[in-house]
Image 1 (cartoon, rainbow, N blue to C red):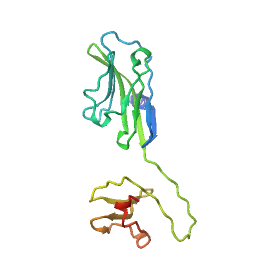
Image 2: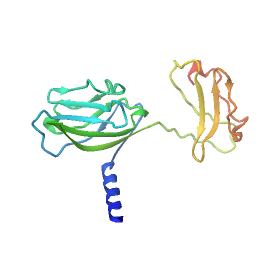
Image 3: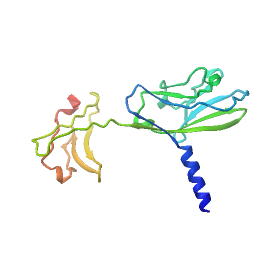
Image 4: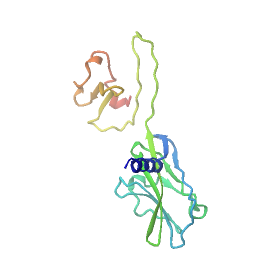
Length: 202
């Protein structure tokens, strides 16, 4: 029983061995996979999918080129493969303008004659940018900058939090009700935000 458990763990780890990390907003990210087997002759199709989505199709390509009719709309206009993928066996997928919601496990498969073969799983982790700000203890103040798009909806709420030990509310602001009262007492009367932030996006 122990041997079986160890074997299953090893297989699971192997299946998810490839992890690709990228920061949100980069031009593109490559999910690299080169097929080592033989290409089936009966109308082969290469498929990239995400099983947690509906529809799960990220990108499909057959001998006639890309087939994106069933593609999940969140990937529309953002995916591409080499047009010679079935000739070169390079099934790598390029994903443009990665978003945080693109994080997940992508599966590359090949199908032919009604049979599908799972080839590889790649875990994509799209990370938010982290900026380190240094300040001497006892300084009068420090400013943490955050900018967003200028077209925010009227009911926007901005929230600063800390999650290094437990989730702490550092500062909250809503353009409907001003400052909110969820702030942790450790930061009470020590923080402030630009009250015109929904116009300046700062």
